[in-house]
Image (cartoon, rainbow over all chains, first blue to last red; front, side, top):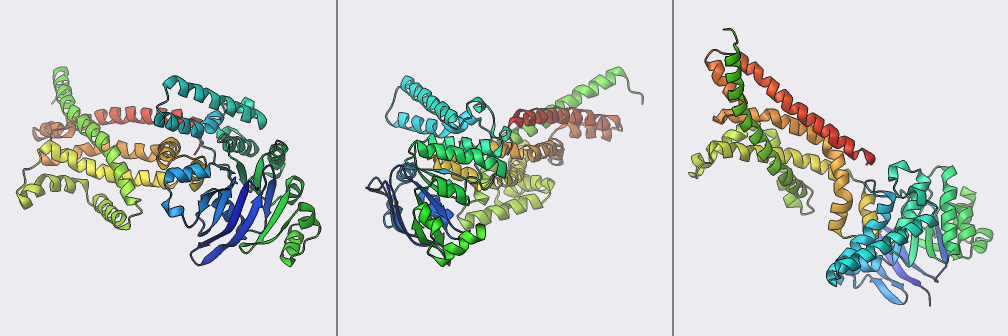
Length: 263
Length: 219
């Protein structure tokens, strides 16, 4: 059974229908890239998965259980929604690191707040909470090592290059242990010479077997890293398939002209 | 009339007494207006439109009318119109000042809060933080950093606005000096500038220190 199952997602902003019924599924450990010109709805789709937008219709299931159902959504409490959204992690185009916190604190802030809440609910003794905090810090240190930034743990975001900031924000998203990590054009805000280090980290994550969804303009990268490609146009999935097929033998005229336009 | 050491000392002590009141008006206004301003700024940013409009009209009136007039209104209007027990002179000054400064602060807060990029909230949301965690742990310190320069301006203005208390006969340093002027002794009036300058000097150093303390991050 697929890890992620998305059925009939639609979303309109006022009179514009941005998503007109999106269906796809994703197996555990696979990497899905979503490509398409701006305005095609790909970023909105990603934001729907992360609960930053609420779809008008549709169902999102992870591991066979529906974490979002448009018909039921209004009945859900804020706490339930928070729980569901943690199945996904999101790396933003503009990093959105917290400027007043060090790199390490950026990674541990949210996990620690969560541990504190849980400790309060279950009346956990203080010593055990401290133990949990230590585990969170340990995990964060491992993640920083994985993105090659151990020596920057006490630096502040303004002291880092764009590429380093983006690597920190990848580690920060992983600190919440999401099932599926999403990237919203992770290299679009970077100078060309800095995109390589970020793409390398994403490749390493794939080799570790992480399930990921990447919205990207980097076609070479999408071709190398993805198991599956979705090409979106005008709010629908215009064409999808393995990278060799989508890039090698595109069928849809829209996809053909899209690939020509950027190639 | 020549200034003698003994008259200088006597005037200094009298002015210091008045200055004590100046400091009290300043401190009370600041302590009460800082949180009230935050409440007003939430009102003006409310998604409940009638509340937002009402707050904005209120802020417009308070910022649009001279503070001196507001002091008169708070002191005289309750008993003239409704026969209510009047505020004491000192309390009337505090009430008028707190409302006035809270409105100015609220606009500074609003600018600071609205200037924080949407992405900061979204980053908190996708990490599973609650709305209040996002505000207090992520947004607030960024707002603080943004608003310190305009706030220090406003707070320095408050030091000098305390002199308006004398319009309803509340004693503060300038009022004391005026009493000397009424007795044809003019120099104490000019001498008050030294007190104001010293006070504002200390505040300037303090704000400079805070700005430097917050220099380690950029917003």
